Length: 506
Image (cartoon, rainbow, N blue to C red; front, side, top):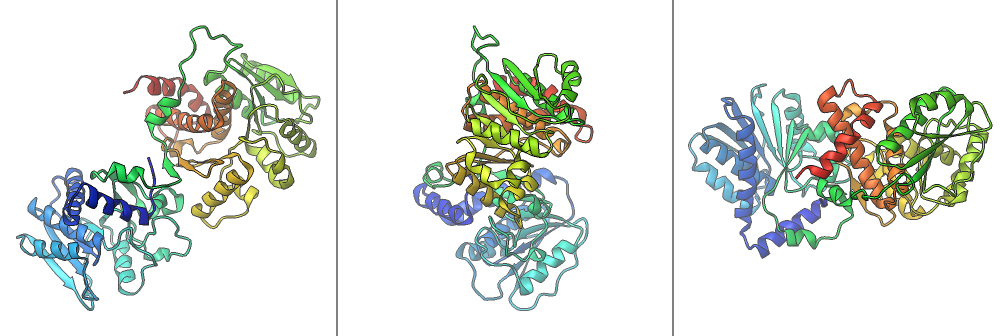
């Protein structure tokens, strides 16, 4: 699914109007009816007031049309139209005149000062002040309106985007003047800003409302931002050969663990095997040996010469992929071993956890990364690699630039994990839940992606499929166990169900 900028949304609207063809007022009616229907479905028996705050532009026109449709459905509607400059969008003006003709709806047009209405907890507020066309922070009277909306305890539904929120970059926004929505009903496609953690308090829940915007027009818009869809992932998943055996399903090397951190090696190795791998070898310190043999009896163990840490690289020429980093620690000899593995460049690599922190301490070593390596930092690890970012938008751009400059894949882990590719595309992953915010979850992801690489998936495929599977397994685990009780090993246990769902659903 393509993610458009605010400007591209307007381009798509215009293309649809011209090529469907459809009048802009009719397209607005289509969008407004979708919004009104969603509200009526969610609050079918609500007898409280509906308070609509409408701005002078297209978003305000949507709001007035929604007010009319809700009033026609029997709701008590009061609409406040802000027309302080005496100039309305033509479609907004048309919907103003239509609303005036509806019994049961009250229209109050604000042309100068506003005597702000009292708002009550059982009110339903429709925010239609500003949409995707906003280009500067809200100030003055509009900022005051937003402040009063946010101070109310009412349910707030924003049409398309919470008023005051920029669709992409909010680095220089005045965030005190952004509506804090309970629900955002986004027309057709999501906005990039919805996918960033710091904006969740403004967006609330968001739902996409398809309104039939032109697919041809959408296909013609060039973009680099995407949300992975299930159909794409299902197409990536390969059928296991009928005559497969352990020698043909890949042999991966997991370099992980240190004294007290054996669990990281266990989780990565178990996850690799559960993802269809033929064989896994774990290179661990001697202190991890007995735990590994008991916990992962299927694994081959290569013991380091040191009891407590990894100190040297073994020959990796017989492996189809290497996963390195979970639980390693950052001791000097371990850092040297990590660099040796990177410098060998014999097979695809996934670099995680302490291996990333070692690279951050030795930035010159980034030049030695094999092309198409996969890096899996969480936000703090990424900041150590590329410098501190003030917000998620800046962090995404830094990760994207690292991927382009070093010709690697950078997976920024989190809700809506971002896969930044060497070609400059950014793919957001839709699976996963807050229960996966638990120790070891990243180690499981390392094992999954390493396994896919060793089985012959291309790095781009392994990254996209691996992140999706990881999140899907977590979702299936949370459905049965609850988010609070989810632990990393549960994700591994639900990988079989995740594979079955991708193979057989739909």
